[in-house]
Image (cartoon, rainbow, N blue to C red; front, side, top):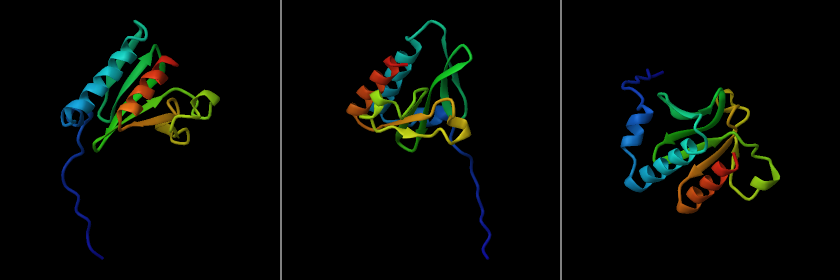
Length: 122
């Protein structure tokens, strides 16, 4: 059996954000502004994996970057009637996303507009 040699380190959220294309970066900044503009008490916390937006102790949203794809995780019920028309993925079975189970992949302008509508619904 061959040995598996893994060398290198994983990129941080800040490094992935800096490597994004300008149009994707503008979308992330607009989503960030929409989340922070929701209430004066919404705060941003940037970790190695993602950016988390909290209202007090309640997690409202997370933004993560995987490859060239931006993913928005929201504290909404993905099975709710009003969100059936959106392509949400339910990640409630994963412990790290139990607070924000609805995941929307932002890959187009339509997905970006949907993300902004869903942020308003928070």
